[in-house]
Image (tube, rainbow, N blue to C red; front, side, top):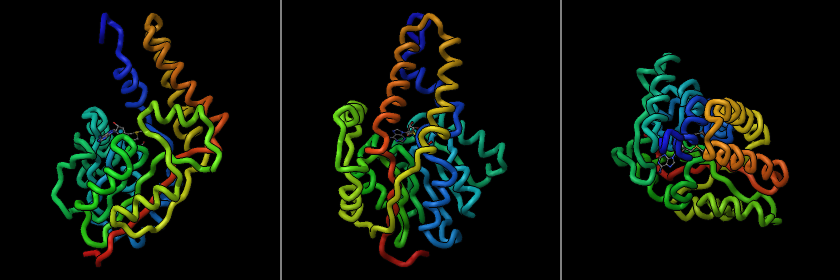
Amino acid sequence: MEDGHPTMLELLLEAHIGLERQGPGSPETVRRALAFLGPPERFQKIADLGCGTGGQTLLLAQALPGEIVGLDLFPAMAEKLNERARARGFGDRVRGVAGDMGDLPFERQSFDLIWSEGAVDNIGLEAGLRHWRDFLRPGGCVAVSCPCWLTPERPEAVARFWAEAGSPLDAVETNVGILRGCGYRFVAAFALTEDCWTEHYFAPRERAIQAMLEKYPESAEMQTYAALNRDEVALYRQFGRHYGYVFFIGRLDGTPA
Ligand SMILES: C[S@@+](CC[C@H](N)C(=O)[O-])C[C@H]1O[C@@H](n2cnc3c(N)ncnc32)[C@H](O)[C@@H]1O
C-alpha cells in the first residue's frame, strides 16, 4: 500500500487470487491437450509452471495419477493452490511452491510432463523450452500455451499491446520451429477457443474488478487498473480473430520410464 492506496501489483494480485484461472483457458482445453499425450499412467511426476491458483493443476490431478508440483513466482498463488488441493482431497500428491520458471528449483531429469498455461511468455517461449528440457526424463512431454498471431494480418493495436506487455507475438509456425529447435519432437498445436477468454477469464475477472471498484472508490490506481483490463477486453472483442493462445505439445526422444 502507498498512502493507504493499493499499488498496481497489489491490485493485480487481489483481482486474480480468488479466480479459478488467471488467464485464458478451460477444462475442455486441458482435456484436449491431454488427449495428445497418451496413457495417463506414463505421467508419474508432473510440473505445472506459472500455475497461478491452480485451476488447471487440479484438473491435471483429476486426470493423471502422478505427483504434481505447481510453481508460481508469487508465494500467495502457490499457497492458494495448496489450500485448494487440500480442500479437494489432493493434498497428498499436489503441492504448490514459490519459484521462478526460468531457474527451476528441481532435480534434473525428474519430470515426465512439464505443463504451463499462459505463463511462459514471461520469460520467453524459447528460453522456457530450452531450460525446461533438462528437467524432463527421456520420452518426457511438454504442454505449453502462449499467445500467438493466428492470421497473416497483424493489427498494429494488437502488436503494440503485446509488445508493451513484454510478450511480442509470433506466428504458430515460428513457435513450432522454436519447439523443434529446443530439441523436442513436435506433437500438436491448437488454438484456444473464444470461451477460454470470455467465459472462463474475462467474465470472472470483470466481476472481481467491479467489487474492487466499490472497495477502493478513492483509488486512482484502481480506476487505471480497471480501465487497462477493459481495454484488453475491447481489444480482444475487436481483433480476437487475429491472435490467441495456442497450446504446443512436444516430446523428447527416448523411452519413458
Ligand atoms: C496469466 S497467469 C496464468 C496462470 C495459470 N497457469 C492459468 O492459466 O490460469 C501467469 C502466471 O505465471 C506466473 N509467473 C509469471 N512469471 C513467472 C516466473 N518467472 N516464474 C513462475 N511463475 C511466473 C504469474 O504469477 C501468474 O500466476
